[in-house]
Amino acid sequence: MASNDSSQQQQNGNGGHNANDKQLANDNNDKTYMDDDDDKTPETSPSDSNSLSMDDPNTYGKGNTKNSSDHKNGNDKNNKNDDSKQNDAQNQQKKPPQTEVDKIIAKLRSLKRSVNRGCINIASEAVEKICLQTRSIFHSESALLEIDAPMKIVGDIHGQYFDLLRLFELGGYPNEVDSRYIFLGDYVDRGSHSLEVILLLFCYKIKYRNDFYLLRGNHECGSINRIYGFFDECKRRYPDGGIRLWKTFTDVFNYLPVAAIIDEKIFCMHGGLSPQIMKRQSLQQIANIKRPTDVPDRGLLCDLLWADPDPYIDTWGPNDRGVSYTFGAAV
Image 1 (cartoon, rainbow, N blue to C red):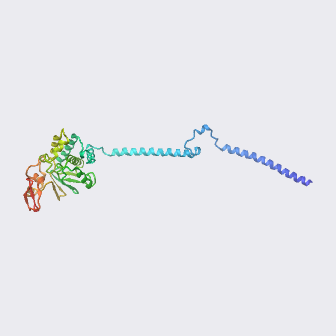
Image 2: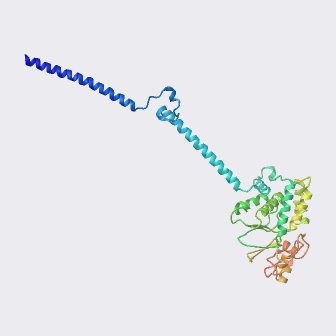
Image 3: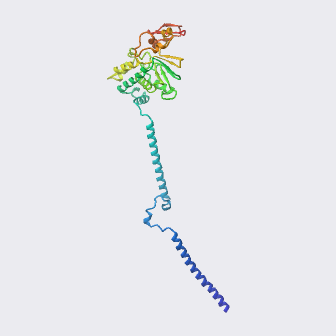
């Protein structure tokens, strides 16, 4: 019995010891938790939560993460727009301002057949200004041009403006690389757009004077284009000052160069050869032609603008036009 009591007491004693240990462990745990709480950041109050960033994903969840991303993207777009505007401003500063000649060229090149019968409206004052600028350039050039290749050689245009545009589309506009031109005259008369033709050519001469050349044809003469259409076109298109404008063009035509040599190999003129050249064996007499000048009825200048080749003769012959000569292969 004693042993049983002792065993029971021992078990009870162990049970008591365990209870005390449990209580002690709980006390220790409470102390541990209190120590841990001392190391933690105090809990944020509702009033403090307003001071937190709206972009903090840990505080406001994924929805606000998107807002943060949108806000960032918006800033990036604004920065890009600012950079784009700055680049545009720099490009505008580098790009030279558009001149009146540039504006007229753009207007002429945009012309359509179906609009206003393919005719352009440019103030007579602007046309006269273009004429004066071109005349000054022609006056500074020799009557005999000496130019380098490569060079594209173009014949009669005769007021066919849309054919001229087509030619530039195929051969390249003068502002493009390797698009150097020399025109051999007869820009006006017969066609219905002589003004558009001569204005575009004059503008290109002003803008590209060392890569764009114009020679005189026999229709760049007042006594001829008064009959064959240019005079009437000027009067019709400019009722209040057409005759004065036609006289201005005639004055410019009197300064045009009459011949050119390309790379000392190719001899260019509107008409043909002259007996005066063959007698003296020199082209210097062409360079000595004094300008301004009208086209005479005979002589060197007349031949350069009016003479024609004839495959059926050897040397010189009469011209069916009633002016100048025809010449054969032996010449």
